Length: 68
Image (tube, rainbow, N blue to C red; front, side, top):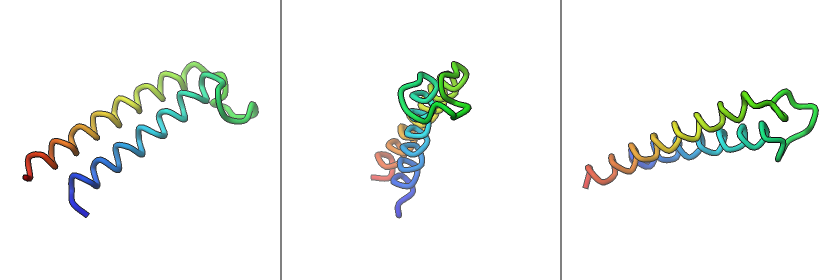
């Protein structure tokens, strides 16, 4: 697998986990017995993870463009 594709895949996975954490913190998804459910700290953590994921995706895209 090319380096750019791998980096984009990792960034997408991190973004998805951040989205899940954010939604659980907002009480949208997940079981009510979860320690993340309705916890505002996890909303913040999820948003931070989504930003990191987006940054990694952008880096992977730039790697693909620069390799051409």
